[in-house]
Structures are given as structure tokens and as C-alpha cells.
Image (tube, rainbow over all chains, first blue to last red; front, top):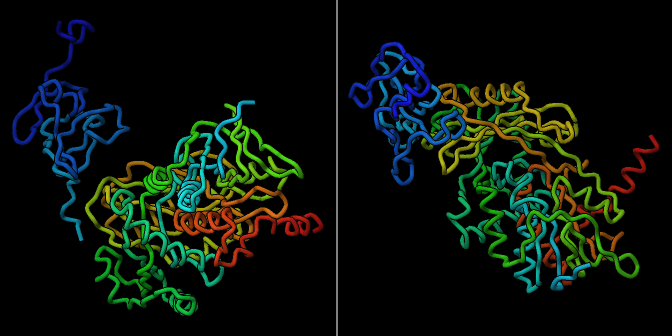
Length: 102
Length: 388
């Protein structure tokens, strides 16, 4: 069953965000994490140590597992960011701050 | 009351000091139990940064203890190594203004006479050591003996290696007493654990445990906050702190003090401390303190302005009025030993404390002057205060 039917939702028209260069639809009010989940994407980061895939875990901003690079800024929590038209989400490898290493 | 297997010693407290006591007691051949009302590293140990410092200590008994402990940590690192995230990274103390350089030189000269390695760092060498440091800082000192561990891992591995029986989630409600008032074990919510010796490694709560034996030990909580950044590559190589930190540590004031203490971790986040204030066991988040810590750290490392803080945590250092821990046999209560009150230095001082307690428990010569750490030294102190 379509969850939109269950709650009688009538969302406005979708906007488009880019995930690793690919267009992904996002409904108004959806977070980037929700938009990616709805599109079947479950992982958008790899861990620093083992390179293992990570996506949303807690979904409420506490666990910092759902980090990715958004509009060029690394370590953004996708579960908290409302999807805005034209947002670019890039899969983040590790900490995303290689430029700062000394 | 249920009697369990008799032990040679019961250690109260499963923080890093209790774990070190258990480790060295077991190594000395003693059958050991560790009891804690919470989990391993559930108190101050789990709220620390894991600093093993000689750099912040003036010549005296605490520095001697820290130097002994630094050697023991190197031995332990050979056994536990990466599992406790031991990093012999060295400390870098930075003067924040030109007027701060002379006191730093004087402090370091006295420390060197006491066996500390302290290498002066000129202004133009600072950024070679720490490329992200702010421009224009007047100079500092490198302390190669400073190191770091992950404190909860350190406590857990010491405890596991001790082979001691663990009674976790089991609060001590009283002390068993024998002829002449000697302590003969502990009473807990689940029964009794008998042993001819009890070690008080209850940290910030050590005063309460001492009180169960009728012994006065004025351990007070000294609150500190730590900021945790997002995971980063290595942007801070050493443990770096502002020279003002030494004065903060030594202060007896109850008021808020804070100075920048910054270090990276193997896991990625940078830890930012350090604040001190005596507000009892109040766990309330205080945004003023967090702002100060962030501003002071960013003044040392401007790059931190571009990264996010993920969270903060806080804990309560076990503070004794003369800033020295209580270590050793309690002359007032036969069978009772103390290993608590290490304030913010408990991770660093834990192995030496455990080693010396182990030697006392087995009747060996401690080989170290424990007189400055006598647990009963506050009897007269309190009396004097009462008269004033």
C-alpha cells in the first residue's frame, strides 16, 4: 500500500536534488535522507576505518551516522536537512576533510 | 547474609584507578574482586580525555607519581598497545601572550630539574610542530613524555587482564567490620563480599565510601565539560594547551575557570576542554561554558572555526583540597585502603596508584614516599577550618 494513501497526504510537486550527479525527486518537507530512502538509496557514506557503507540510523540527528557532503560541505546530517531544489549530495568517503590533514 | 568466595582484596570502583589496583593486586598474586554500582568506566573515567600528563605538574609528590606512572604506561602500552589507543604524542604548551613566556620558562626549568623532558619551542617553530596553530603566538614548550589513551578502553582492558571477579551494577551499601573495627569486606545490595582488605577507588564518590567506615575524606566534585567535533583527519598532532591551564588546575577556587586544551583522537573527533568549576553534582548543560571552550580553542586553532561540534559531555573530577590524591592504607581504619581523589589526572596516575596499593597490600616496600598522599591528612585541615 502506498503510504501517501494511508495518511491522505497531498504533497506539492517534487523538487529535484542531485545525488552523485543523478537527479532524485524530493517532496516538499522531506529531508535529504528521506528523499534518498524513497528513491531506494540506503548508503551515502563509507566509514573512516573499514570503508563500510553507512546511511540513516537514528533518523533524528543524534547518531551522526547519516553524514554526507552537501553542497560542498562535508559531514552534514541528511536526516535533519530539508531537501531544497538543486541541492547536491555527494557520497562521502571517510571524514571528508582530507584537505585539513597535517 | 550470603558469604561469597573469600578474596584477598575487594576494590570498590571500576574506573581506571580501580582497574589498575585490580591489575597490580592480581599481578602480586592476590585474589581480587572489583565491585561498582555502575558499569566499567561509568563515572569520571568515562568522562575524561585520557591524558597522561607530566607537563602540567609542578615539582613535588604529584609529579613524582606522574613520572612513575608515565613509565608504567609505557610498559602497559607494550602489553595493550593499540587496544587502549595509547599514543605517545607529546604535549605542547603554548603561551598565549608574550608576558606568559617567562613564567613558562621558569616552570619548565624547575620541572627539568625534577626529571621532566621539556624542550623550548620558539615562536617560529610552533607551526612546524602544529601547522594549524594560530599565527603570532610567542612560543611554548614541548613535553615528549606526555601521552594519551582512550580512558574507557584502558579501564576495561586493565580490568580484564587482572582476571578479577567483577560485580558490576552492585552498589556498596556498607562495610563489614571485624574485631577492633577492622574492615573485613563490603556489604552490597546483593549480599556480602568478604576480604581482609578493601580499596576505596570510588573516585568522586570516594568520600561517601570513606564515610561508611566513619573516616573523613573530603572529596569534592569539580565539573568539567568537553566538546567533541565531527570526525577529522589528524589536524592536531600533540596534546596542545594554553599555558593558563596550569594555573587553572592549581586553583582552589570554586568559580568557573577555563583554558583551551585540544587534542585529536584515533577515532577522528577532536576533543576540546577544559573547564573547571565546583557546582556539586549538577549535570545541567551550561552553554556559557561551551561557548568559552569553543572560543578559546578556536583562538589557538583557527581551523576549528570551520568544523562542527557534534556533542559535548561532562564529568566530575574527584577534587581534594590540596590537589593530591589519597593513596594508601588508612591509619584510622584497619583493612581500609584509599586510591581516589586524583582530580583530573586519574587516567595518568592510575598505574602508579595501583602499583603502590598492590605493594602495600602484599606488605612489600612501596619504594616511594606515600606520606604526602596519606588519606587521614585532612583531619587537622578540617579542624583548622572549623576554628576559623
